[in-house]
Length: 256
Image (cartoon, rainbow, N blue to C red; front, side, top):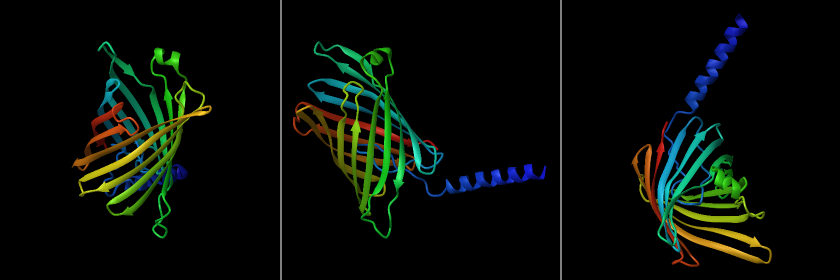
């Protein structure tokens, strides 16, 4: 009986310590907007919802409706990510159809959170995703599509942050992956307003031929509440600006 009471007290003490450590200053670091991903990991037991709408102009016209992601802090150093995308697409005959993208299950794991003595050493994180066919039609045309990224970030000044990513992405169709490279400059304009500019690129090797897609993007984010961020952004294909461009808006909500 005494051992049981002791175990209960120890478990209760551990739970209370976890609750106390998970408190403190309110955390709000969405991955929105932009394609480059930061090294920030959701705090333990926190949940964030990030969603938005995006219009694509150029050779084809589509509306991402919506892109939505839930992020769950599952440990002190890792988060679980669940993402769903669906889009309205207009074909050459101006007919509209709704296409569902693969369901994405992923995680982001903190590797190194920086050093005050050596601030030139970047923060580091690892992100792993798995795209899963979400409809019978997709299952007929693609397999499971993994992707892996190393994420880096440096706080240059209190108002300037540099994030850079390198990764590989399989599309579930081609055997060879595409290489993903991104560089993002993030600015803190005020305590409630931020901005960014970024370059993100996909490089695919088709035997002797190498194809590259280079994109430039920029946007603003506004903290309308300590738990809610709104954002607007746009991006273009740097090699063929008239071929494809994107514009969108979104919201991130720290649920708890």
